[in-house]
Length: 274
Image 1 (tube, rainbow, N blue to C red):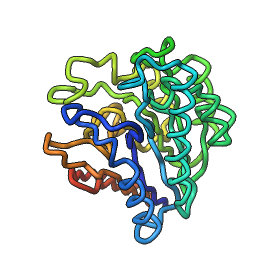
Image 2: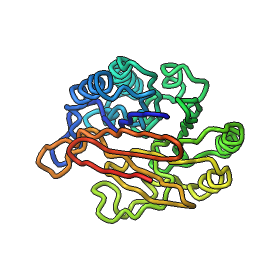
Image 3: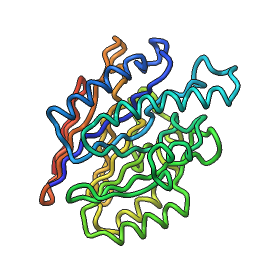
Image 4: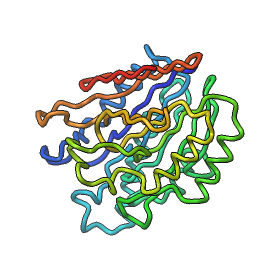
């Protein structure tokens, strides 16, 4: 059996205007609550953090700030969030999000994570977890892809394991219907991986992928391709209805004997099982 806790899109950083629907000022207390709950009740084999741990400072009042200063401030915020999550009494595996890497070089993140690349894989319990880096096609672009080198690495990595596989990314690898999404309706290029069909082809041909998770879209969603559920997890700090009510979202995942249970907790609950 493998038991996981998933959290995503905390957006630790400067407070945002109410209309933005990101309650960034709550990132620290909500992450602290998450860590306490994980340690005292969930007790998973690992925590997966699916990206956008920070809200980059250039997205708001930092527009006229020197890039070197913005990068330093973003990295400091990232380290604060990372340190808080490091209080989990289990391994924590991180995904790079677009806000994480807007001003911070991915190499700085991998140095914090102690991984050779921003994409990597680990065995957790009875499962194999693959972390993908949905990389901007050019600096500070909202359009992302999985580069060819990483795609070939994924193919080899999937072929080398006999465990059921969990794929993690920040952007979605699915052809999601974006109707009604607060942030991305009509903007698939800003939330869906550009070469997602190529990535899904590698995943489908491997025959051992049980589920793929992502964040970024600030809602809960399941879209299936080739019999594989591609599941988006709601943001921890999303204002769910414009009333400054945070989602407080995190997911508990159990995999056992081919059974998958995914339950998103908080103010925007969601359940998937198969």
